[in-house]
Length: 451
Picture 1 (spheres, helix red, strand yellow):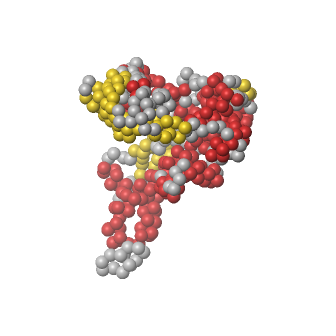
Picture 2: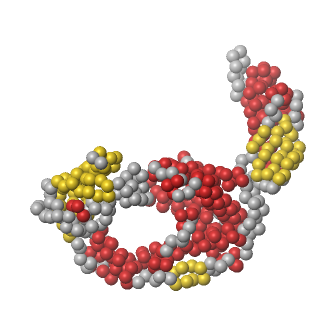
Picture 3: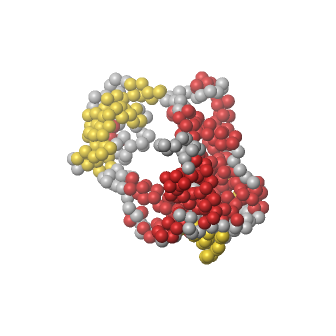
C-alpha cells in the first residue's frame, strides 16, 4: 500500500492511497476460499464447486465486498501509520471513471482512492495549578430551615369539603370551566374537575380572585387576562372570560409541627426532622456551589487554551443547537423577531456557543487522554442503576432500552466522563473558598442561558 499526502491546509488533510492489484487479488482469493466449503449449487456436492465456476457465479459480488473491506481497512491503516486523528469520519472518493472501476474489479488495475478529513488540533494543556477558582459556600441558617419546614407543612395540608362554605384564600375549589376570548372558546381553555388552591397564584391574573366567596353549585363568569409574556402567542396579553361551575369547596387542615408530624416524614422527633432538613439544604447548597465552580472552571479552561477548531465539528455542533432552537421557537409559536433579534444575529451568538462547546470538549478529551482518566464498568453500572431507580416497576425496560441504544449509553456516559475530568482538574487547581449568603449563592450569572 502506498500513501501520499496530497494536501495539507490548516487542519485539513487529503491522502491518496494506492492498493496494488496483486494485494486485491490475494484478498479476493482469500475471500473465495472462505466461502467455497459453504456454497452448494445444483449439480455439485457441497464444497465441491470448481473454483472457476465459483468465480463466474460470485466473482463480481465478492470483489465488490473485497473492495469495500479493503477501503475500510486501508483507510484506517493509513491514519494509524501517520498517527493522524481525524475530527470526523473521513470522506473517501473512489475513481469516477466507470471504466477504471471495472478494471479494478476485474483485477487489471490498482485501487486508487483519496480520503479527505480534518485532523484534531495539537493541544498544549495549561498548568491547572495556576487557574484562579473560587468555591462559593453558604451556611444553612434557621430561616432556611423554617422555610423548608413550612414547605413540608404545605405539602401535608389535607382538604375537607364543607357544604355551604364560601371559598376563602387557602381553600381548594373543584371546578369545571370554559374560557372564551371575544365570545369564542380557545384551545386549552376548557377543563373538568380542576382543583385550584385559592391564593397560590397558579392560574392567570384575576381568575382565583374571581372565585373568592363562591359556594358549591355556584356558576360564575370570571374575567381574567393572560400575561403579555404568556408562552402561547395567540393568548398572550388577551382578556378572557371563563364560565365556571363550582363543584366543591374544601377547607384546609394544617398539621402541627410536632413529633407526630415528624414521624410521618421518617423522623422520630421534630429536632431530628430539623437536622434532616438542614442536611438536605446543605447538600443542595453544595450542589449549587459545585455547579458554579464547574462553570468557572470551564470558563477558565476555555480562556487558557487557544487552538484552531475543526470546522466540521463546529458545523455539526451548531447544526444540533440550531435544530433544537428552531423546534423550541416553533412549539412556542414565536419567531426571531419576537426575541428582538435578526436570524443572523442569533446565528452568530449560537455559533459562538458551538465553538465553546467544541473547544471545551477537545480540551476535556485531551486531559482525560494524557492523564489516563477512564470510566469504569462499576461507574457505568451505578449510573444505569440510578437511572433505572427513577422509573419504579420499569427497571427491566430501562436496562433493555440502554442495551439496544448505544447513543443513549453515550449520553449517560458523557456527564460522568466530564465530571471525572472536572474533579481531576479541581484537585490540581485547589480553589479557594468564599462564604456568601444564600441569595448570592443562588444568583444566576447574566449569561446563564448559555451554560
